Amino acid sequence: MDKTTNKWMKWVFSAFVCLLACGLYYYFFVNKAYVEIELEVAQKTDFKIYWAGTGQPYSEKKMAVTVATPNRKHYSFFLTDIGQIARLRIDPHAYKGEATLKRVFIRQEGWAPISLATPKEFDQLIPLHEIIEYGMTQNGLMVKSTGKDPNFELLVTPHYLGREIGWLVLRFAAIIFVIFLVINGAGKLVQDLRFVPLLLFGVWTLIIVLAGTSQENVHPDEYVHIQATSYYRDHWLPPVIEDLAIRPTYSCYGVSRLNNGEIYYLFAGKFNKLLDGFQLPSYLSLRIFNIFLFALLLLFTIKNQYARIIAIPFLLSPQIWYLFSYCNSDAFGLFCAFIAGCLLVDPDSILHRYLKDDKWMSVLSGGSMVSLLLGSLFLLKKNYYPFILFFYLCIGVTIFQDNNFVGRHKETYKRLALITLTGLLILGLRVGADYKVNGLDRQEKLVKMQEELADPFYKPSTPLHEQHFYLNMKARGTSLQKMIQQNRWFEKSFQSGFGVFGYLTITASNTYYDLIRWTGVLSLVFVFGSIFLRGTLIDRGLAISVLGLSAMLIGVSLYHSWTADFQAQGRYLFPIIPMLGILLATSYKTVNSSLLTLGVTTMYFLGIYSFIFQAIMHSPKVVFP
Image (spheres, rainbow, N blue to C red):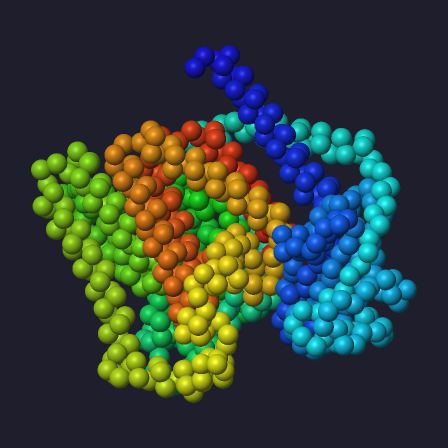
């Protein structure tokens, strides 16, 4: 391709990105109404607003929702274009009982705002269903419901005030100017994927902000992760299951993270002990280990081009970044899988030197470090088993196709078996230590503690019809089809994999998830299509393996939700991320880098939007003295 064609392609690409950015800005921030509400509820619930045009019925497809909790009063989210609204249905809560709606304020550029704050304004609400009593108090509109679906209707007459076209054009010009500066000034960053560490650095700064400003235990199950990590500050061996000192580590399920065998808590606890001299707040010091892991990930990408390819899928979802901002073991699993992927695809890594070299230093040092990594992989959550299978499959493919292994396959497999056995030995030591402390009847003790400490909804002995409605759905007679369609397992798993924060209470608009969905689908189709069309037979085989193992992981998660506990959380599917990174690294030459960069950066900036305007802005903040 000559210079003239290259220059022309660059201008076309720049123009396309500018149009895309301006379109997204207009769609998200100009042509959408922004809703601010003040609400007091007695329990965790959904606040919903449905909208409908003239002569249209209300629909789940035309609805915005935010999760409200008793310890929070202020909420905000995007709705739709005010000009398309004739009626609003407001569902203040979804439980039998009382809630107090203090204020609803809907605004959009160019339109007169819609406000519900005064008694006169609240008088416009028309009660529809399941409202036995409502009225104004000093705190706002008190609503008492007879069921789980109380709602009001508000008739709307949108009043267009006119937009400041000059100001809008100026904003578009600023966006175009910045994009052209970035594309033309940072062109060299695309070479060798140098933009990847730059984008990761931006994420790292946001992770630090969220970790430093959000309250303790406003993130999923952080309290049990903190308690388990704190135990290993001063201990090396697993605890006695019945020890009164570890009672705070047991969750409402009657289960302790200290009893699941994960090695994360040992590493995080000892790391936290090292920070004692810095006098950090306890909530922050317990989060720094995961922040440190992301910093190591960033440093790997600065140094190594293969690491940059592996890290590309890590740029696609703010939910991945979120895991590194608070105390939890899922971030450690992603980090270990990332390191394993880097060692696998880099021909100069310590893994390759260990398998190829005859120098005793390479064999000793490489074998020790890789064994420790394998031991850590074996001590991750069970959802990482598909990744481990894929890791070994890729090692086998590497040994098969790499000419450096010709004539020494027997020796290579011996070395691979040795580090595998050493990794399994680490696993055995952890399991053996647990049985040494707790005896061979360890499982019976765990069942006993679950029965003693679990909340009534989660006790094994609680009659089925009295257990939490998300437990044992199959045994209750719920069909798999109903769980998928009515309980929206796939949709909830998808959304919680791309930006649902807090205790699943902080969500974005449906528009955001739709944009992420279709950008992600197109990117995946493009990558896998490129591999199947242009890749080698081995590339295609690995692509099929990733698809198969991913489907298996999704299927197991779905089955667990149906037969045991409904857990539609995308983070359980995150072992797919490093598998995609490895696949991309092994077949990178088959994929057009410009189109790949476009898809990745689009999802990245959508994720940045979600992380800043949802996770950071809406997470309850630490009150500094």
